[in-house]
Image (cartoon, rainbow, N blue to C red):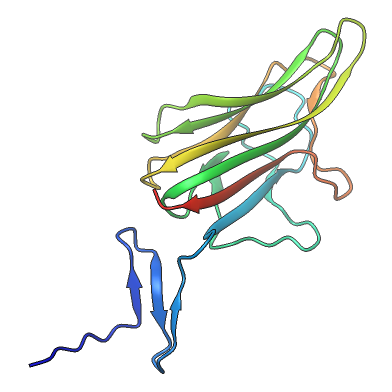
Length: 185
């Protein structure tokens, strides 16, 4: 006696489609390569400390922008991952610091949806007599084993009057947050 199993879709334990069929014999493998990529930008300058940065965050909307998968969600500055996996969190930052000031942008993660830990930071510093203007980047690999507890946010600190983290200006992105799912956890 033989058995036949008919399905339109196979999912992994996290509910992510790994194989699908169109019902006519065409099978598509959907879990190859990068399965998630998204980018958010800072749309306006930050001129005072923010913990977390919770406003002026928007999905990239520049010419030709594209994302892979459903993308990140963001609420009050807290970013939620669309699926489990090893995620690269990249920050590209442009800061302007007045003399004797530092402008710092931290990446913070949580694994319990409550306690956030600083994991990497970018900084711009003004020297003793002039304003410093700097672009820097960081990257952190985050093992997201549960999308309801593993989240990320960003914190701006040490911003004196006259200093800033630069936001979008006439369509040009100065500070961005990029999320790329590299593989399974």
